[in-house]
Every structure is written in structure tokens, then in C-alpha cells.
Image (cartoon, rainbow, N blue to C red; front, side):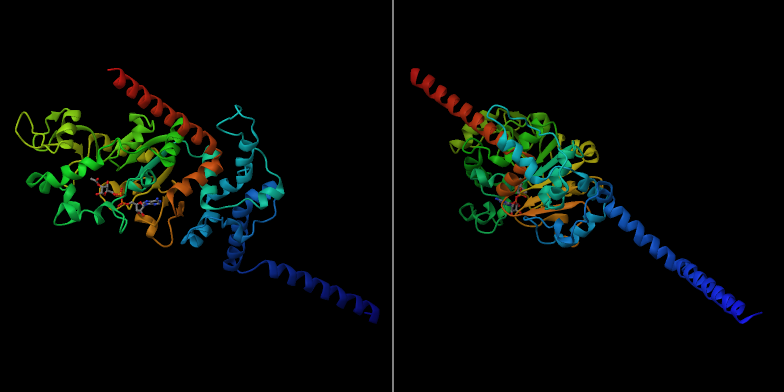
Length: 416
Ligand code: OAD
């Protein structure tokens, strides 16, 4: 073999070694290979929507909206991983787009649902990803059409009715004048059986008629008008849900109401208006059958919940969004309802503080929490959905009707 032939041969060998090296480095041990594949598939999954639409990757911080609540750092991470989050990132309507067309609409051309429009890359990259935006997207995308609302006293504070447990202002902090051994005794059936006077005295203040529904109630009615409300489960006894026009069949008053009355011993019905007259004039209504004390059919501690409550066994498995508003979730069995939706169903808590399962860190995948004043949060949500003006119009119409009927009643009274 000549020197030049030897040189050619050594070059050939060196290049074939490089090829082998290259292929070996690709052929990693199986464990390492799996890791590479996993990483790749995770990237593909979380960015598939972006890849499909050619968007730049969304920076980590993009999920933090202006109303980001505490505890949501962990939640953000989970959302990004979920299939639901991928659906959300496919959503093509930004917050601004959802609101702007409503403002641009000429008067009288209000449509309750603006059609989704394709957003530009620039807009999509800057879409705010806060809690309310995420839930609004689900609703606008049509992912949630069976919405359950679970509510408590916090939805009525904007109507001027105190809740029960807020320190200082809550009803239970202001019952000293009734001299009950502990605050909840005023709603305890055994205590009432012994001495109904404290409750009757308080009932004079609680009877519906002195307060009007607020924006939050009308938001729920709007959910119904949009065909999205599966049912509302309320613990409230103020009657404001019915007053704002949520139909009876869409409402479960789990802790009863003042709309009917019966004997607390034998349950014989008693005319509600009669009972009210007795209570308002400091007299005790008595059962015509057993002489037991009659009380409005609000559910006391130690009493059974109404039959309508048991619709929850059918409703909760059917729900595709649960909104929890203004409740401390301290009273069972009502509080546990929120744990009976399917595990994939998004739950939104609108409250001043985290309650029930929302106190858990990290939050469950699909749990959203917007802390702060309920009225503010609900108004923001309505604005994102483009419902705000419709709700304001609805409130104005309803208030006008009430004013007119009061005026009419005044006139007819005057004529008599
Ligand atoms: P609570 O007083 O226990 O809880 C009200 C919740 O709403 C609290 O977490 C407040 O922080 C919150 N809240 C109040 N005002 C708010 C606002 N403006 N914005 C945001 N959050 C606000 O009332 P419930 O959970 O409804 O039973 O209480 C449940 C039951 O306990 C009631 O139905 C009642 C009571 O004993 C009966 O009447 C028989």
C-alpha cells in the first residue's frame, strides 16, 4: 500500500468513526431516551394551540391577570398543563374584544352575545389570563352550558343585608339584645321550641320587603336569560333571588324562606301572610291542629332541608361549571355540595376570603378564585362577558316596574 493510499484509508476510517459517534449520541440509553421523549411531548402538548396557530410562546407571566388572587401561582402552573387550558388558549376572543364591540354598538343594536372573532397574533400574545378571563372564555366558547350557582349571605350585603359571620358587622356579632346563650341559638329548633321570642323579634327585621336585589342577583338572572343556568342553590332567606326574577324552577332555597309557614311540631301549614301579621304585631302564631308554635318555613339548625334540595343528586353530576359566591361554606350539608361536581368541572369562588376547598394549597386543578368585593368581581366578569350593559338595563327596567307598581298602589290606596 502506497503512502497516499494509506492516508486515504485513515481519512476514511476517521470519518466513519465520526458517523458512529454521531449515531451513538442519538441512541441514548432507553431511560434517557424516554426522558427526551417526555420533554418533547410535554412541550408539544402545552404549546400545541400556539403551534397550530403560529403564535409565539406565551411568557410564563402572561397567565397572571390583573385580578390574580393569592394562592394562584400554583394554580397557574396546573392550568397550563390541563387540556382545558389548551382549549382556553384556542379561544380567539380577547378581553378587550369581548368588551369593545358592546361599547361601539349603536343604541338599540345590543346583541347579548358578540360572535367570537379571530384575534390577531399580537392581541393573542397579550391576552390577559386572569381568573375571570379564564372563566369568561369557558362561557363564551360554549364549554359551559350547565352552570350551577351556590350562594350565601355575601351576595346580599350590597343590598344592605348583613351576612352572618363577618366579624363586627355579621348578624351573629350583633345579637346581644336577644340574650341567647350563643348566637346560632336564634336559629336552633330546640331553642325556638322553648322560647320563640328571640327569633320572632329578629324575624321582624328579616322579613323580605325592605331590601332590593343588587347587581349580583341580576347577574345570576342574566345567566338564566342566556340559557346557561342549570340551577341556583342559595342558603339565603331574604327572597331576593325570586324578587330579581330568577324563576322558581331554577331556584333551590336550601334553607327555606318566609314565603310559607307551618307548625314547628306537626308541620301543618299555616297561611304565610297570617303568620307575618302575628309576628309583626308581637303575637305568637299558633297551630290550629296541635297548638304548637307556627314559624316561617326557614330551616333551623336541627331541621330537615326541603325536598327541593335533593335535586342536587341530579344537578351536580350534570354541571359543567360551578360558581360559588358569598358564602363561608361552614354549614352542612349545604357546604359539601361544592365537592359533588365531577372532578374535571371548573369551580369559581367569588368571595372576600378563601373558603371550603379553596383554602387548600395548592388549589385543585380547575379551581379558580377571585377574592375581594363580590360586587366588583361580578361586575368585572359581566364586563368581560359583554353583559354589563344588559344587566344595567335589566336593573333599570325592574326598578322602574317596582316604582310604577308602588305608585299605582299608592294611587289606589289614595282613591280608596
Ligand atoms: P356567612 O356569613 O357565614 O358567610 C358569608 C361569606 O360571604 C363570608 O365568607 C364573607 O367574607 C363573604 N362576604 C360577605 N360580604 C361580601 C362581599 N361584599 N364581597 C365578598 N364576599 C363577601 O353566610 P353563609 O355562608 O350564607 O342559616 O351562612 C350559611 C348559613 O349560616 C346561613 O344560611 C344561615 C347561617 O346560620 C340560616 O339562616 C338558617
